[in-house]
Image (cartoon, rainbow, N blue to C red; front, side, top):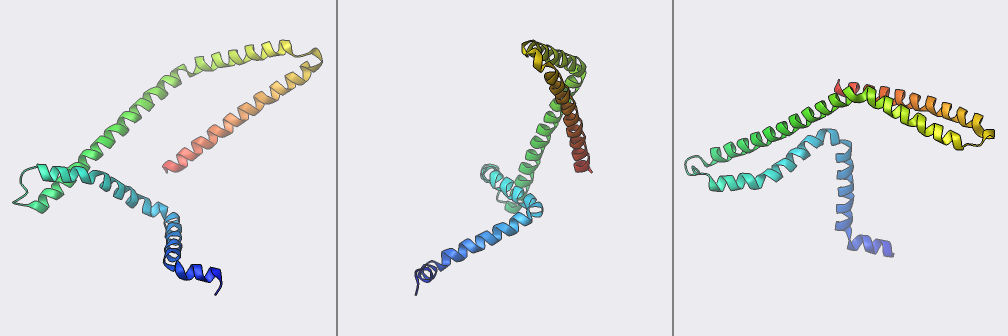
Length: 168
């Protein structure tokens, strides 16, 4: 028997486990869109379980209806967690909305300041360029400006199309 066959014979359980683990991971990876909510739910349940156990141990009324007590505690903990998450999302949304509104109000002045700064910067550089290269420098700056505008236009268009398609 060769060395490879001996390794397989000695470690067949480990090899079988690794092969099954790879197959299981590949299946989960293909079905991640379906399985992801369940995985998130398991993680949340695992994280909230100590709180549920602590409340179950310390709240009165376990003798009359022990099953109902646990169900009501689990429901209450999940409800409170959802309220906290909703409040955090609402707060984040309002902060983003107010920041976007402030940015939108100051955008014209900011754009003017940026354009003026770029013009001054390029004028200072133009003073340092030798006279024999001024035409090439001017053409390069013009081409760069056109390219920047095209990139911004295409990027914003694709960004808006991605957002609108993901919301539909």
